[in-house]
Length: 451
Ligand code: HEM
Image 1 (tube, rainbow, N blue to C red):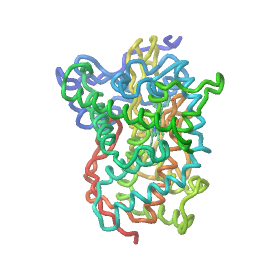
Image 2 (cartoon, protein in one colour; image 1 turned 180 degrees about the vertical axis):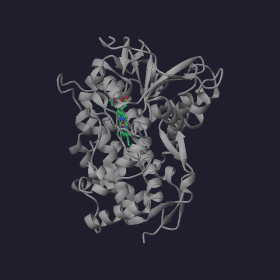
Image 3 (tube, rainbow, N blue to C red; image 1 turned 90 degrees about the vertical axis):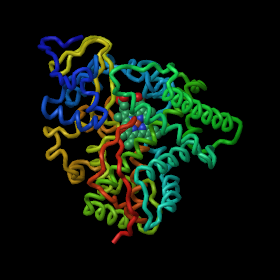
């Protein structure tokens, strides 16, 4: 379906090192390499990866084509095979009618109204975690927020059903994240059935997660109901057919929410604290705002949308450090992007990390400046057709958990504003760490009192 009347050509190609192509640069710091290349060669280019190549796409006009106008042609396809043993046919891995049916069934559980009802519980989870990070302590910020986001999902999704010992499931998720990060940009696919130690660790991690989810669902089905996401999904019905979700699909969606919903938010909060540590003037503005709104009480749902500075800080952190920094689509038929040919079955890698730093749309793109959102819309979620701000994706597959993530992050920052600030020991040494998502390394910090 190449667009009529348009001259199509090949995208510029970066050849990299003989034999390996750009693999070494992708492994050492993929986001930095792709951004550098986009600035030199333009926002759409090919990068050689061993014997093959990948097409990187980042201009909003092309995102609009892929994610909106030609969304039926650009599907998940086999780009998500690596993670299928874990997520099955969960929402982020499915397309077409099956995806639509699941999305329709799950949507009510993620609507803003339902998520807002979880605000108080989220606040309690923060208080409990912060008790382990008293003023004066030295912590690892990324680890802290990973546990916090894990607790948030566990409590809001399963109430207390996971029990006290979460070590096995934590380790399993960490194993899977490292596994996907290390395999995603290898030039050749290593089959998952090969008896390699890394494959064995991956399958074992999937088994642990499967068993845990099965146990929780079985217990809940035989017991009392709770006002949590698990109950919402157990009782969810397709609005057209009235059918409940099949057991296997429920399992896939629960694992998906757990997986998609905690590492991403942990990274958002980590990068936000890195930026606040580098820009103490914004940390102070955030604290003043929170204290003016709710110094002597817990945050309630209505507050979340009445804290413009806090929200703008989060939007700016999502712009500069989008946790979902890259994601893929595969063309079913030949197509074209800004005059560049995309062949059938070719994979297009959509890179919000570059889109969010295009000077055409973001003046001084590398500068952390929440004022740009304060001036425009501090509550922006992106996802519209303009497609220059896409931290939660765009089009029909836009993140179902976006309100959950933002509510949780605002609640966490508000709790921090009353507790103490995470002062990075070496903010200038923080670097990108690429796993399944974009996280940060060197995030040791001292918990300091606010002055
Ligand atoms: C800061 C936090 C988060 C970020 C940056 C983020 C980002 C994204 C992005 C970019 C997509 C679109 C991927 C694509 O088009 O292929 C997506 C989809 C999705 N996200 Fe999130 N996400 C976050 C938090 C969450 C949370 C908290 C949940 C669940 C509780 C969640 C569940 C999902 C699901 C199920 C999808 C698939 C939607 C579909 O295909 O219909 N995410 N997310």
